[in-house]
Length: 357
Image (cartoon, rainbow, N blue to C red; front, top):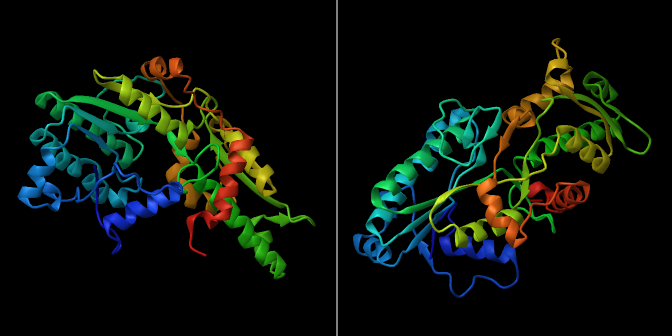
């Protein structure tokens, strides 16, 4: 059974059908039953009869609904989605036959740390954004309530998820995609101005173009000397999740992460090579110039400020428990190399970064 709500005047059944149609030609499997309901509401907005009927049929729950926004101005909305709504689902779990609760969290619930982050519930008080904070609070809430009710709990902590490593397909273009998208946007914007002979704008921003259309965009991006970005493809995540769910029957915390951290310099290299850009460079924090930035750097920084910390991340996620399950099954995370980056960018361009034409 799949609990889903209506959105933007689209019925739950239509939303789920569109998702399965996007995933492939087979449509919704016959075993999937869609239950119209809303986590925003106590009792999911169902009648008492339907609520208890549903509870009588549930043995396990997978909770993957969340608000992934980072913005502090959206705090109330994020807290509602990630913490308050979880209480509604845990209330339901306690009244149902549920014996196992599967909670999809994030590795970044570790909060402000450097070095090793264990696969464990660790009380943390300092975070880089409200998303990290609320996912940490949600983990603690789930652990406390499931412990009290005698419900086994698995917590799955993926790092930064991008599209399918084999096809490049994705539904969302945030996280890894967003800074790249901004660079491409700025290149295209000023290339258009260049063609319109408004070169004063180019010069003010420090952008220049060669005869073949390659853009020189002098942008320095601050990066930690030993840090990087932990990226996993969605196909690895789903395979890992399924394997852990089927194997870890006593409950636990599992980091679904990449053993190979990708440096900011590598991402910059891929971006410049694919989109024909030069001039972008990663600068270690201790060497980053203290003086004022250029207008182009200021513009890029304003667009990407919420991701700044993840370009300087020095958190290392221990994945011993997850690896003990995944390695014997031959499930491993691919390195985010240029071939995979190219597939992801080809798809992004093909669908105009998710924006309607």
